[in-house]
Image (cartoon, rainbow, N blue to C red; front, side):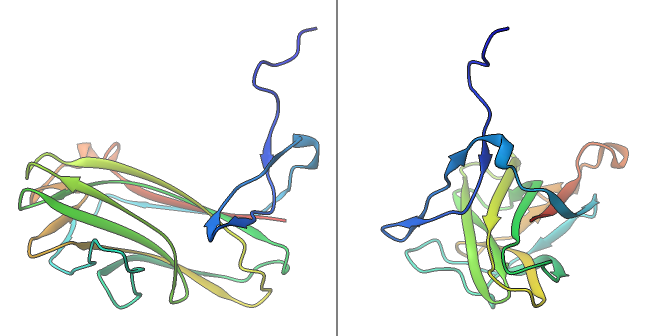
Length: 180
């Protein structure tokens, strides 16, 4: 019997190095179990003109537009969450940054932006975030979107034209998984 080339891995507690989160890999035999998994998806076309600056500051929970919100109560203070999202986005004006920010309550735990060099050429985004809230009381996760400067952003549509493929393929989705 041969040994797998890449081996077996799973994520464990995530330390920080110089303020940057670092994920450790360990043998999968110590793999955590799934306590809760929540999935949601939509083909609803959403647009707006709200801003999230593309600069050196952390996005605020008052910036941009909230795309989804989910409250969960962790099974224990040791619970970890994996938040996964995918969606199509576009901008009505060329050369704009569209920022997506994930929040736990009012704290931004992840942010990413994409630059749309040409308007009307949508991009797809896939985000995966690991969070350890260290709390057994209810926490709320949300996703916010905003453009860097004056323009209209679009989610699940191409510069104002909905492209839903009959509701099967172009679907914004998110999954939140709690691990014990």
